Length: 210
Image 1 (cartoon, rainbow, N blue to C red):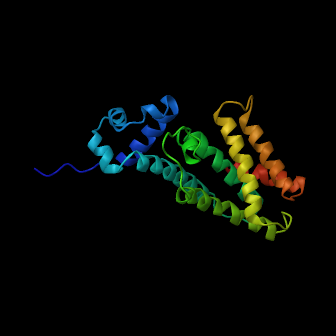
Image 2: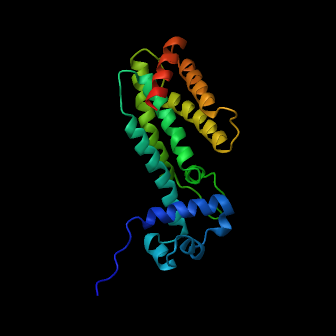
Image 3: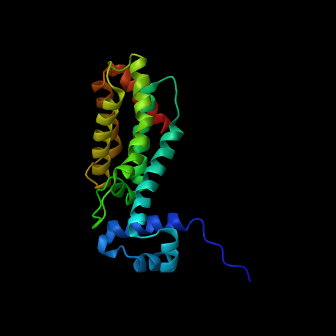
């Protein structure tokens, strides 16, 4: 009798279940026994996929950013870099809404007793930001944004959109979170130096793409 093959989807299943347990019940619920029961497997499988709980939490961080990076990659480049930046903003929000349990873990915001993100873990987030930095650089080169360090502008935008996405997940953006998000994107483009009318057209284009 041949040995049973490992389920290739199991690591992702465990990551999603762990993030859900952490968000809904707190760090005390995040044990190998509870996690195994949650997905209907054995603790041995958990240890086979992840050497320990630190590795599991680290996998949650990496998975969250991998999903964000995939959405960023799907945006691509067009002849309107400002619309591309706005599209990346929509992708950022979409990732947060689609992965509400993973989102706080990605940034160390979840209550993880005994675990702290390392600089290597944070590299995943910084690497993902490179897509936005490149888009900002194209907007500067095209004369849409004022001359500035693209990395600094991208970080300022990240700060604003991260706060907005966090409020969105918490249910604080009422009555129309999407409209609030669009207005924030418009203000960010204008603050970076784009003309209001041009920025509005690019924001509208990004909304249609989204």
